[in-house]
Length: 109
Image (cartoon, rainbow, N blue to C red; front, side):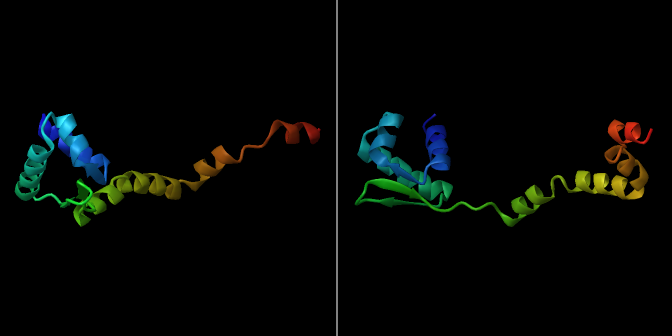
C-alpha cells in the first residue's frame, strides 16, 4: 500500500514534501526518507532528495519514442479509411452537404 501511495504521488506532483509523505505513509520522517532513498535506488526512479528543503524532486518523465509513435498513429487507419471513402465516392459526399433549400425552390415558382 505504501508503494502505491508513493507511486501515485510521484505521478501527480513534481516536488513532494518528505514530512507530509511520511505522515501519509504512517512513518517517521527519517524512516520515510530512508525508504524513499532505497526505492529510488532499487526502482531506478528519476528522482532526487533535496535535504535543505526536505523534498523529493521528481525528474522529467518523458514517454519513450515507441510510446509516442503508438499514440500518434492510433487513429491513423480509421482516418485513412474515412479519407479513402470520401475520395472514392465524391458524389455522395457532395450530395449530403449541398442539398437545395426549400426557400430556393419556392422562389422559382
